[in-house]
Image (cartoon, rainbow, N blue to C red; front, side, top):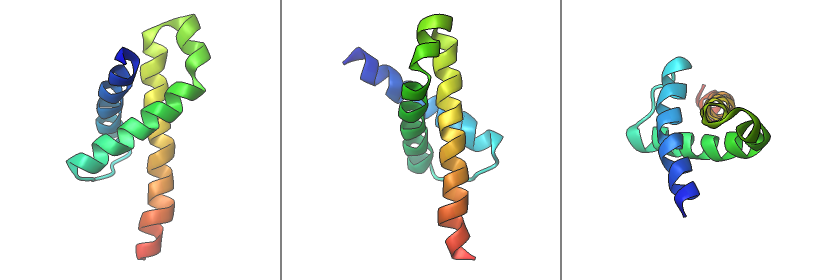
Length: 82
């Protein structure tokens, strides 16, 4: 249970950082949701690094996961609006 809470909090922070770095203006709920999903994807993908390098790699993985989702959002969602 503690691990899930950890990923939720880490994901919310990563969503904020990721959307600001990539200059994507979303609402609070969308930013948190994007961050949580990105943290879960990035965290799973980089779980091996977490074991080797420590907690910092988990945060880096979460931000990378958010970056992938933001690019997908910009391409698939915002691209349809044009």
